[in-house]
Image (tube, rainbow, N blue to C red):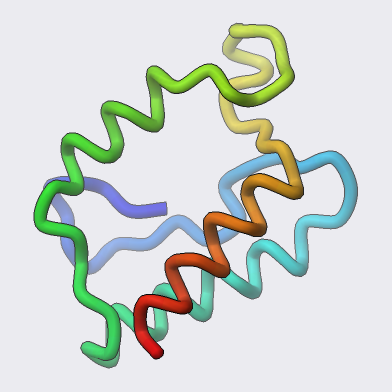
Length: 88
């Protein structure tokens, strides 16, 4: 949801889950609000995290352009909640 080289740009809801998108978009918006307010630090190693995330094949979809933004809803939710917990 963040670009490595543009610190104040967020992409909320740029993913495709199986099921409803709103819960996950709300969690992403919460993370963006925490970042903007300074309650959550932007990762120093964001370029490396993006690279690892793009190469990780832990989702259950075909490696194609059509499936490039699909997420496993359970794993994705767990990761988003984990990010929010860092601000607590």
